[in-house]
Length: 137
Ligand SMILES: [Zn+2]
Image 1: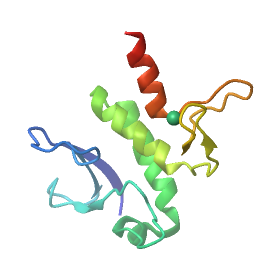
Image 2: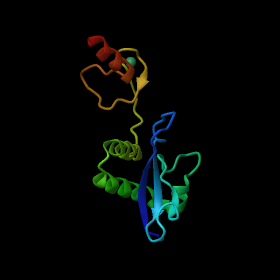
Image 3: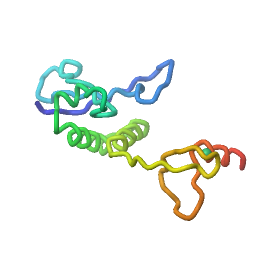
Image 4: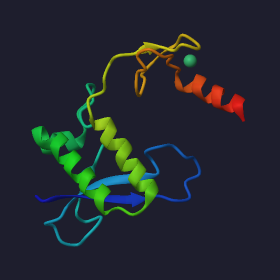
């Protein structure tokens, strides 16, 4: 099988929920007939969640992660739609192992995953940052 990635955009969805606006379909490029005849499985956001391996992970096994990254990176280079590019980027980020380290917000004290830790400054969670910026307007 020669796996390819097909990104299908869904417009006019009544309820917007991230990840549902686009379908990331894995297709077999060696099979004729085009989509959806060559559909293999969906590219999941999380390749191998602890609870239940995705169809994708079951089909591609140890190659799953590498294949997912290669397809997403390739699609990113070709894609012109900025929203799809952002979604590809988001998915690529989610494929990277997440640092488990959480730190306490300097504002509200809640634990959160910082994008970047300021060693000697204050770190604010997303909510507090929003409030701070909203207050300045
Ligand atoms: Zn906070």
